[in-house]
Image 1 (spheres, rainbow, N blue to C red):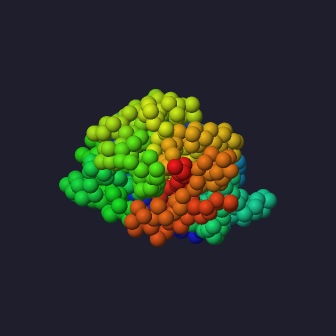
Image 2 (cartoon, rainbow, N blue to C red):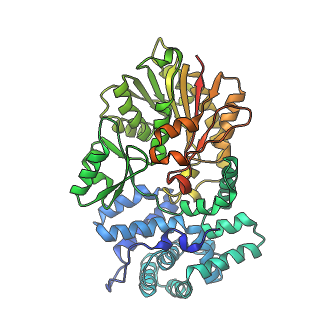
Image 3 (cartoon, one colour):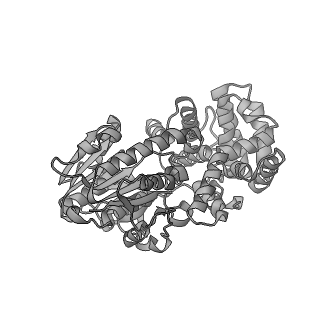
Length: 503
């Protein structure tokens, strides 16, 4: 278990004191509350809802930063805060009216996860609940949050852990309550660490990394932008960039990505370094036989929303290759079209189910695609730090349907691969069912594919991350697979296996 003091919001966000207004609640807190309600009522995504609310209400600067941390931090740490609120209130938090519950969660994050003075956090929460739920619950909110404020977070977490144990919980139940993850995800992450040959005692560091907001990483798409140009544009606007260990990537500091001209025009983009790295690894894999010729056909089978497709398109133009980027959902295909709009080479965006369309997407007269990227739909357990509400939306029941879809897509991609070509199987999840098990099944199925030394190829393009890229083997197969980890590589937990159909 990690020290609670290392957890994300506990390192503090913007200091915010009560503005001393009369009347309604603080607009930033009101916006954060609206995000929680839309996530709960409409199954909305916080990263899509919040920017619109901030624009609509003209919330900017420090107030926007405060609203963002308050909304995202509260969603991310919901499990921890509900456990604390249950102890502080002496009642089942799930039984509270939803608006009251959300105000209590927001207040608790201000008290325990941000550097907001207790009097301001309590007073503003009472004002907010009065507006959204009436006068009746104000006494409850005031009393419970004052009780929360009376103790520091380490003391509360000791009690949360004791309560989980006394209730018959196992180790993963304790970790789930303290580190704000569903218990099934805690178990799955532990299994994935062990399967990757890592020390299971890293689990605490991994959970802590999941609870730490990801930095904004940009990609300078080859031939379209450069790290130097991104830095110049950022500094001209009063921000800056920090060099990332991965070549072609930078971390943006101090300004919003869309303010940079190269991001606004698609020359560069916001893209996690792990997502960039797996794409570069596919491009670095050696082709053999007929596929070794310059040019050829590349296929991105599940291309939405288009970050990897844009990176492939930029490189395809440099190498004279043809790229087909396919996406099953029309609105996501539109995002792909925007992402690759600057491509100067032969790039085509199609809409179709990759399970049935893979073979028909290959250029007529060719035996198959020379490079195929299958970034398969998955649980997204590798991006929990980036999507604050995601951990509460998934369930173990989702795995069966996703695993079946991944299996069918992987089979279709294998069938569409040319002799000597390379297939990259990628997921943004470390779950064993979605990663190692899928590749092992494909290799046992006699499809004529072999597993490459994915770790060696990935290290060749990883720059300063290379020393931390350690592959692991699959039973009965030569070659290696690569699992990236937030607490080790500072990336999303991307999985990569590179496979070749021998010429």
